[in-house]
Image (cartoon, rainbow, N blue to C red; front, side, top):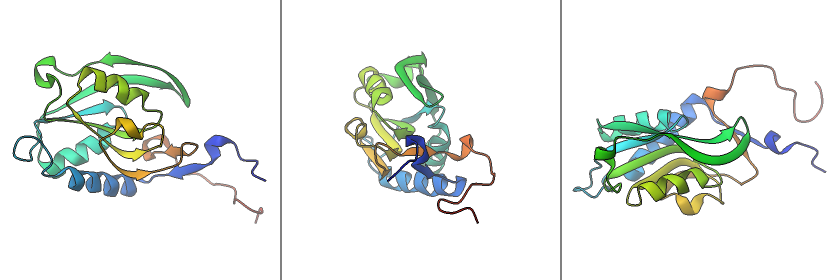
Length: 167
């Protein structure tokens, strides 16, 4: 019998792991852009997409980077997604040649909102859950829908009780 809370089914991601997985995503995206394989720019979905976007931009030598701020969580509770800050309209157009990067696609509501704004952009996340997968074009690792991903920017090192026993 499993008496753990849903958020206790966790997938803990270290800084090293997010770096490796973001580089793997960059390798997957390399040469896939519409301009002789190149991408015009990266748009990071804040805040989680900023670290992967930085790594991908470095790996693919993309110098034009902007952000879109979408709020879809209130702590660990999902809320209706809304855009708080949009990227430069002149840069974006319909999204052609733009990589939209986020750390995770969960329900897909954030990416669905952004995809409506920029339908021809390429959407890439490091991690994907089944409900959100239809909204993402490229990803590296899939986790179950009931897994909570703990990112390194949300964590602090501390003692953790063993799963079984108390010794």
